[in-house]
Amino acid sequence: MVDIVVISDTIVRPESYEDGSDRAKTIHLTPWDLSFLRTEYAQRALIFPKPDPETHMISQLKSSLSAALKIFYPYAGRLVKTHNEDDETASFFIDCDGSGVRFVHAAAVTVSVSDVLRPDNDYWSEFFPANGVKSWEGVSKPLLAFQVTELKDGVIIGFGYNHLVTDGASVWSFFKTWTEIFSTGRKEFPPLSLCGWFLGGIGYPVRVPISETVPSPSPSHGLVAASTLQKKIFRFTSRHVSELKAKANGEVGGSDNVSSFQAVLGHTWRSIIRNSGLGPEEVIHCKLAMDIRQRLNPPVEKECFGNMVGLATTTTTAGDMVDNGLGWAALQINKTVGAQTNEELRRFAEDWVKDPKIPNRLVVNNSLTVAGSPRFDVFGNDFGWGKPIAVRGGPGIAGHGKILAYPGTEKGSTEIHTSLWSHVLDKLLADEEFLQHVDVVVCV
Image (tube, rainbow, N blue to C red; front, top):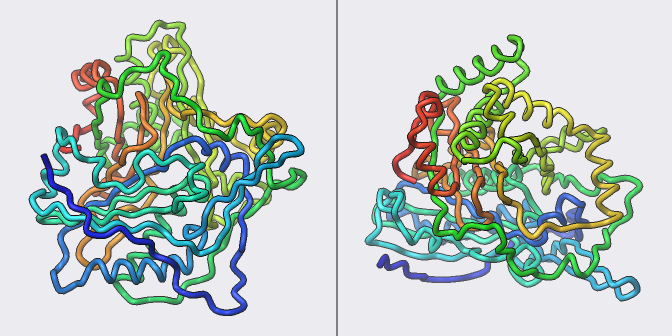
């Protein structure tokens, strides 16, 4: 049994604000935000080399985190729920009250980085601070939480965030600012630009039926026990990525419409379906979380803070997926992404507020649900004691077909972190067509 000792569990608040600060006091939530109300906090981890003992790591991490929270102040707020008795609905907003974020300091001095990265370790969840926390619990729990665990030869910074207030792009922007403050002492940054409420003609706060806002029992019908799920990381080198992109575009007329990531995702999706044993008529989906900032008209600022994630869902059948090639699969994803226009996004929002439905879970059978992005600069986060050794996903939103995409350590490479039924993964690991364009990461 691994001995992970919690040394302290504290709240870090933002540095004090100057009088006359123009920071927002409240943030209203959009239909895209509210769709995450029942989901668990997204959790991620960066694994670093061990810093010099003279660094005074924990005290400096806390002070620099406080400075970063002064800039990214919504993270230090809390979710507020209002019960509208006149129509039995509830409304939500973020109160930017400076309550602070959770900061756990822990130690596992007998555990090495190589131990953590082993595929058979059964204590991974203990490195994370928001296990089992649902988004609606942000009314009383911090919207962002960190756990810094000192290992024998490294450090794990695990963190969990509430998707009602932020998406991956904003989280990694925050992390970059935090590391820069820590490593350089820089304190002056441009003021935070909020994505804000951008849906003209739709009143806010959005009213959601009470029945859609309360915890619901986890559905069990048709689900496989978590013990039958296995995780595996597949690394696509820059050569693999280039080959897949060229192959996909060559199969659809020699254009360059299919992007590198769409080719990688098409190869992965098609290979998983080929090894899933589904009947040809069974309907399958690929749900790709995508940034919608620049798809609105007028677009919001590219770097604005908030949760601007739309779900682009590609639907087909298992038979069509198997019978057609990589180019066809990647092109279906390409077409779905291209269909996420300003008109389509606003139509979704207008329809949603008329009949709000909040899903119990994001990962369902016969679906790939893809989060993360190879564009996130996760390996650019350096506190001054070395760049990250690895990035990993934590407990949280899970199920067969959950995919996390991140850049690899090699420029132009992509890592696909998968959670799959064990019998599907076993077949995938023996699939020569799949493996000729990918490397299997031994340590997960």
